Amino acid sequence: MRSSLAPGVWFLRAFSRDSWFRGFILLLTFLIYACYHMSRKPISIVKSRLHQNCSELVRPENDTHDLNDTTWCSWSPFDKDDYKELLGAVDNAFLVAYAIGMFISGIFGERLPLRYYLSAGMVLSGLFTSLFGLGYFWNIHVLWYFVLIQICNGLVQTTGWPSVVTCVGNWFGKGKRGFIMGIWNSHTSVGNILGSLIAGVWVNEQWGLSFIVPGIITAIMGVVTFFFLIEYPEDVDCTPPQHHGDLEKERDNPEDPANDPYSRRESNVDIATSFSKEPGSEPQAISFLGALKIPGVVEFSLCLLFAKLVSYTFLYWLPLYIFNVAHFSAKEAGDLSTLFDVGGIIGGIVAGLISDYTNGRATTCCIMLILAAPMMFLYNYIGQNGIASSIVMLIICGVLVNGPYALITTAVSADLGTHESLKGNAKALSTVTAIIDGTGSIGAALGPLLAGLISPTGWNNVFYMLISADVLACLLLCRLVYKEILAWKMSRSRSSGYKQI
Picture (spheres, rainbow, N blue to C red):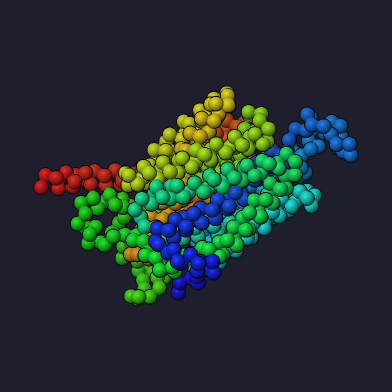
């Protein structure tokens, strides 16, 4: 049974042209996930405020700290020498909960109406984000409060990604998916930028508002989602997308092998039988093991683990790195760190365009990962020599680090979730997306944790860790890159054969 029609959609039906509704869904899901990321970003901006050197600040008249105490302006319990480890624990409370919850979230996302699921998740995420900031106004100084809030927020934020990717996959077919989703996936970077800028307004004064304002915006967006999200094109009499063409046409197409380098047609029956259905009945949700059998899911999932490790370490620790190494203020470091996300917007679009043109998702990711390793090395050694070099290298690093991450979590997930071996059953999309992003989220949890443990030994070692993870992500795609190259060669040989005939 299809989802119930959202109340706010009725007046839109008068304008129900397919392209108009597809554009509307693309914009709405863009704003939805931008809000999710906006609510995650403030913690990285506020870190430098929770622990800072107070020797250059003027003490208030009613201050009771010792005169030799240089951390009197820091926020307990982050005012001790082990503050990096404590901040790492706060990060990981969110990220570990997110990684665990993501594997479960996709299963629920396939079985519950996405409109209700997303709306509830956004309202709860806004609530927990605001509760973190209220710790400032309630004068809370116990670590368990902030860790518990982060755990709850991490769990409810898992409602977002599988749901929005499934919704977009329901509306858009495979053609030019990389380019469309490359633009659409800029919501991640846009959300990070908005979160940084909003948090930066209050970080040096009432830092609790750095969380409360994004939390309120996220909750309001959850209400908007309830009234306006349309899960299926059929709900408003639009034409559903064609995920895969007729198999007979594909056999006649001389470029067939390049259509899907990861496909193994002999596995079609095996995978499809795990969710077989009677003609005319509603498609059955795919099992977890059935999703893992889809060609390419395991490789891209493991690659994303290391790619996301790198990306999320930048997300959570870049402002503090700039604050400590380049000696900018907390607000200036937060503003400068947004350039990495600007590069991420460009990288996602470029990766999508190239992969659409070449039909080589794995090769595109692999090349960008290869280039990212030396660029991170250079940024660490010469990126802080001047403001100009820092700006340029942050943008380039953002392009190369976030490009593969964006491509895998969007176009690749949607491709595999509507893989031809599923024979038109798009019910697998949420589970496949959750598996890929859930595995990546393990890396997202490991990266900031390792950064918190390694950074006391020197920032150079943090960057060596990031470069190593980047190389491992690249190596995990070698088999798929090889298959894509073989497909290109076969396609060229067939094309030349047809021209000779």
